[in-house]
Image 1 (tube, rainbow, N blue to C red):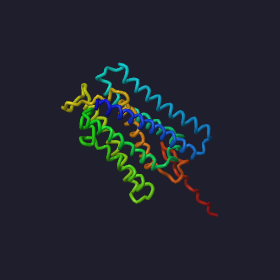
Image 2 (image 1 turned 30 degrees about the vertical axis):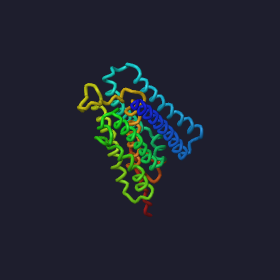
Image 3 (image 1 turned 120 degrees about the vertical axis):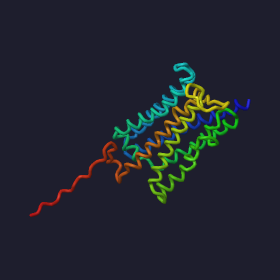
Length: 264
């Protein structure tokens, strides 16, 4: 009975986290478009489109946990692979989309760092499931997963690097890189802890969350989402300009040379 209650509470918490991420993304995107002075209808429809894409992806991946589209032993590998490929495809798309890049450059730099504080709740959720014997220890901060440090440090990095500017902005760049590597490490640990062809850890509690609803979203939505946000933050840091509305992300615009006055 204890296992059922912990799983139920964890599932509700994960659903709340996903809803919060979708809502915050919708709000931040609309704010960025308003700063670009788009029409109110464009702002509204673009925000709706982003929500529809995210919710559609959630429904699709959630559906995979109920049907045998992939063999059950290969579903964890499939979800983990999607968790890496999807953000890379999105980053490539944004690299070649000037309009979206301009909107992102208008969004608050602190937001792209502060949002990672949500990862603390996810790590606590995993920790409680470890205590209750639902997932293996290596998936929590008691084992090999130190992602909670990224979440706890996010508000400090955002404030010190972008608000008070007491810390060099390079520290935020390094922090983002470490955060992305931490996510990839979690995916690998989760995959190697799951029953299947890649099972590595010799323990009595294999990871079965990767094929259960809604926990499949950890690797198909939550990990890609935060990995994607890390990439956007790195993009802002590397390509910041005085006037981001004139910013070309693919190839920074060359400054026009001032023509010298002709000598009389």
